Image 1 (cartoon, rainbow, N blue to C red):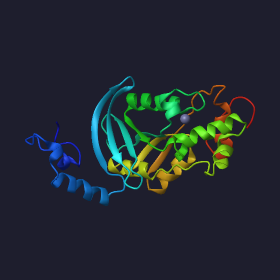
Image 2: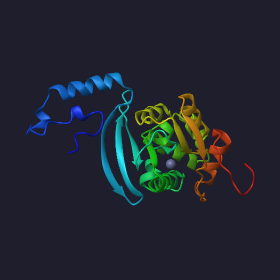
Image 3: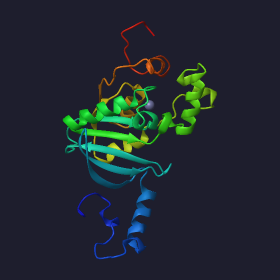
Image 4: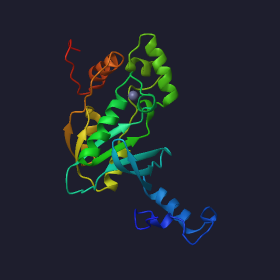
Length: 236
Ligand SMILES: [Zn+2]
């Protein structure tokens, strides 16, 4: 174990303690104090080799919601430089199942490939279904099968079209001391959230190829949610 890494080294169980889970002393108290003091404290990190490159995955805990967010880091982070960053919100149907109803997995894979080659960070935020959760997203999909678009379906369920927040992304970037990013995004809200927090943003277009299943979804994102997407065929 590399005990020199990370600001939470103090919470790691003592190597001399044969029953670290029974250690109820200082480490837990330290973690408790940290949780009280920080909105999104760093908890642990580990190296994970993947098909997209070698990453160090940093885990954070969002105090307010109990959600576990990840910073997937490639290469050394030199905070004096502009860092390539992708903010990706969890999409189980896309990320895990490979759903063609959205472009999330394509975007995630493109982002991991990009930072795997050039260095940088993919922030993986656990705000499924634009913040409404997986089960509500399935309900919204069911309404879309009856003809609603993604925004209309959210409204029919009593949700705004987008419940996501990027405060935790800001907190995680601050953890790394990052002030300048090359943000891979089509979403002006992400740019606005970082700029509001004093982070200088240079946008890099992050539009992937559409397919017959997600074209309407992408056009709705552009038309109703202001996403910066271009389409070759007929105007929106
Ligand atoms: Zn998706």
